[in-house]
Image (cartoon, rainbow, N blue to C red; front, top):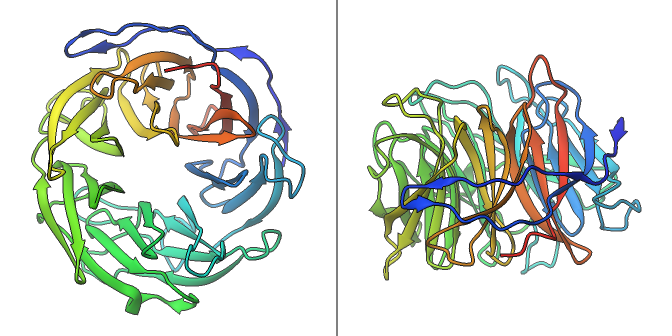
Length: 392
C-alpha cells in the first residue's frame, strides 16, 4: 500500500455558532501527521483503534490492520505500518463485502482479544429496507486474520448492520441494524458458523425506525433513529425495552452519537432533504436521573451540510465531529469541559469532507483518525491528526 506522510500541516482555527449565542474560541494545535492512501473501491468508511492498532474499514478492499504504536511492526501514528488485511465474504449482498465498521472485542472473562466484529453495509432504502451481515474475524494471529462466523437478521423486508457498541464485561454485542432496529448478541465463548442462535433480543420502536448508532452508558443503551432522534433503551431478562426518547428531532435526520457524564451528543445529516434544513447541527442532550434524554441545546456548524460522526476522547473531555459535506467540511474538535456548552477548539478543512473520526491516546499523545470522503475527483485516505495541543 502506498503511504504519503505529511508532517506539521497546521489547521485552520475558527469558531462555530450555537443556538444560545456565539461560540468562544480557544486556539490550539491540530496537526496532520500522516495520510495513508486507501484503494478507491469506495474507499475508507470507519476506523477502530485499540492497543496501538488501527482497524481500517476499507469497504470492498476489506479490513486493513495497521500498527500505529502496538510494536508488532514498529509503526507509529506518524508512520503507520500494515500488519495484514482480509476481505470477508459478501454473503450474496449486492455491492460486495462493504466493510463499514468494526469492533475489536477484548473479552475480560476469557482474557482473549480474539474476535473483530465487522458490519457489512449493503444497499438500502430509507426507511424501508437495508442489507448486510455481521462478520466475525478471528485475529488471534494478527498477521493472518480469518473469518469464522456471521450473523444474518432474517426479516422481510431485509435489514442490514451499521454500527456497534460492546458490553464487554457481559460479553454482549449491540448493533444498530437500520430498519431491523437494535439487536443484542451473546458473543461469549468460541464463535463459529451461523450465530442466529446467539441473538438475545431486538427492539424496533416504530414501523419506520431506521437506526444509525448505538452506545451504552450508566445502565442504558442509547440509539439514534434517523427519523426519530435519540432513544433510551434498557436490557433485561432477554428483552430490549424502550424507556424514553424518540420523536425528539423533527427538524433534521439524525446520525451518530456519543454519551458521557450525563450528556449525549448526536449529529445530523441529509443536506436540505428534511424540512429544507441542512444537517449541520450537533444536538446536545441532558440525561435525567433515570437516563431519559432531554434536548438541552444545539451547536450549528456554518457552511456545513452533514454532521456524520460525533465521537469523544477516552476521558470524555474532547469531542471529534466529522463534517461530511459543505463549503467548510472537515474535522472539528470541541472541548467538553462544560458538557452543556461545547466550545470549538479547532478545525481542519478538508474539501472532500470527513466521513468518520475516532479519538485515541497513543504513546502519551492524543490523535484523531479520520476517514476522508471518497469520490470520483479525490483519492480516499486515512488522515491522522495529532491533537495533543488542544486543551479543554
